[in-house]
Length: 473
Image (cartoon, rainbow, N blue to C red; front, side, top):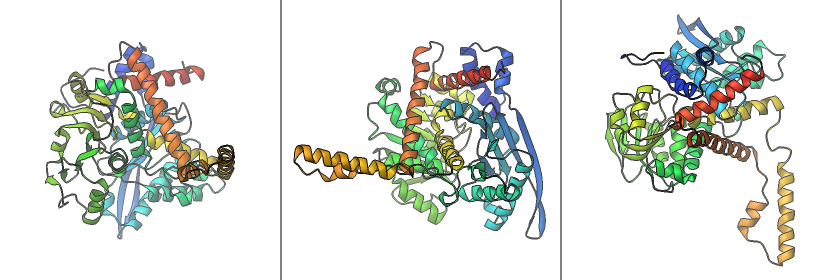
């Protein structure tokens, strides 16, 4: 694939980044093309009556790889959705699942719509009709293709899709597994809503546990006190910023939203900003911060950590020279283009790629899917047993020492992990292990000069191993 002077499409940008890893691994051109090519993409157009008039909506569902089933990936509702974006996101899902050892193929879906222009009842009719199209054409089921929330969708839409699938397949006892990200009361799992943002934070924490990587990025040890700029205070950005603010002692010095940027060098209280947005539908007018309508300029604020958590192609060849951060954690999909990635790397800015950093969502989606197929919540059978064992251990300690145990010991030892504890533990373990896999490649392979290439090397090695095992190559 040869570069030209025009801006790259999203899928081209992803493929160029993958090409680096394929080159490192000396993969032949035919195999390289088969790895990068989407298996199938379906486009559906369907009519829905809205306020007495017929409107026609268009959507896509792409399967990049079904080497493992089901293929997994969210559905986004947005006015900028197109086929190239859906295929690029589907390919990212393949690599993402491989990096974090989630046994899914990669898929993605999108509906071209502005949800803000429709009522709740309208959105329900549209969502159910879109789901029906995908189900009938074999692009949605617990066994082959499992969507999840993405931009413009959430628990509500997932519940509608689940019910639609159940109506069409009443005999399928595993119907709850047809999507993830459902409400907890309807087969969802605790911790799924926060999962992607929390996974971002777990990735950042693991980075700071590795002193040599921190030093390479030009940062001092310790996460506390680090300055952070975050773009996007949606679901992912909100939870990432909130945890860094409240648990890790970071200074969130700027928050970028659609209508501008808030700046406070002493640090913004994330929860207060979120409440202001919920109440006023804008960040404008938030007290204790300077506001600028030039939101894009917020990406250029000097900081220790930059977290783009909004849209793809936010850092491009046009603004890459102006970025003043030490390290970037890509919480969004594709926020840094291929050209910008080259420029930032040459400038010594360390980047942790989306295919790793925002994999918390699909990791916990995997936990939810397993829970749905097992028909039992995690911790139900062992929680009280663990509490009893802890109580016995505490009693034994008190007998041996002849002393009353302190309150914190009683609280921590006589405790059985519930579902949320187990989900967070599994997510933390996943992000830590995956980081170390990336670091192993980054630090031992002389041809790998950045963590993005390391991530794709890890993913492609696992994909090729899987293909070889099932006889594709």
